[in-house]
Length: 313
Image 1: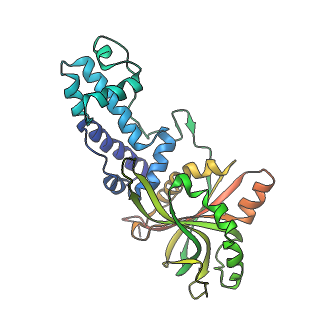
Image 2 (image 1 turned 135 degrees about the horizontal axis):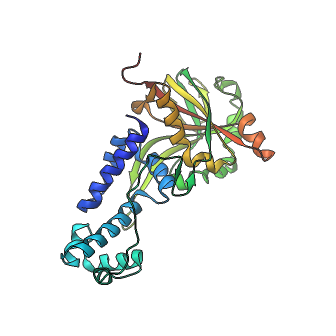
């Protein structure tokens, strides 16, 4: 399925959740878009300016306001229809969002409009422009290898802070001792971040978080004698897309890299290999480190497993 159409289909699904007052099923969202919900959450937050759960909440408060204005149903009935646990909780959320009470809206007060989200023009949504661009894509065959380094479970909000921890823990000094075992199918790089094992974690009384396994380190040949203090994971053989994303800043790349990568893959006759999915960003010396040091545009190299799209030989 085309990436943009998958995003539109996700909004259609969210609109049914909003209308019915039911819970968001993130596994269903993952199935719709064809990749982990944690990655889609990041794309959604960037283009919409809010999380999926916040979008659903605001749309419910807007649509409930329309129902209050245009029907004679009781406010309590409307609150329950849109999934609120009590009329009191609904009234508090309603006033916080609209700045007026439900009763005032029934009397003619104005509502804060929250239009249905559309991904038809992803280059510019809500005043946010995608500032990065894909400058190169190629497909190569990977031999089996390992990724070795420091591993933590984290979220997109906190993954960046782990790099300092990796340097402070001497991860790259330990990897330096294994230089002869480095995979040689990449340009010289400082380090990489390898994301996999996406899942959802919950804490009582708090909004759920998308989490994933994050390894900061390097690719090594599978027979490398890795010391036990380093975490290792096997990366299976297969076809990968190697993609360069360039922008003025690292944040501009990170915000929309997955969107740009999947768009490029789809346009060139491939699709993401969900069965072996991982997501890897590589910080090369030539395209990232050196330009960053002189204040120029930076490029991240991305690696993700792919396969020929259905119907293409």
